[in-house]
Length: 86
Image (cartoon, rainbow, N blue to C red):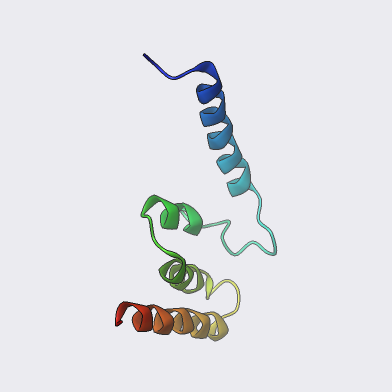
């Protein structure tokens, strides 16, 4: 049998909440003009915390903090390499 009414409502509510979250930007507009939101890409591809932060910082560096964001991405990448090398 199909999903219950409450499951359908939650599914619609979750989809709506995602769209609302994507419509606003906290702390600047550095993600607004992207073709896909970085967090949507990370979640859709089941990318973990460390790799997700690499993607986040590399994606936004030109619009936000320049080389500082690239250094942050490298820091997360270094930790990811450390973890994956064990």
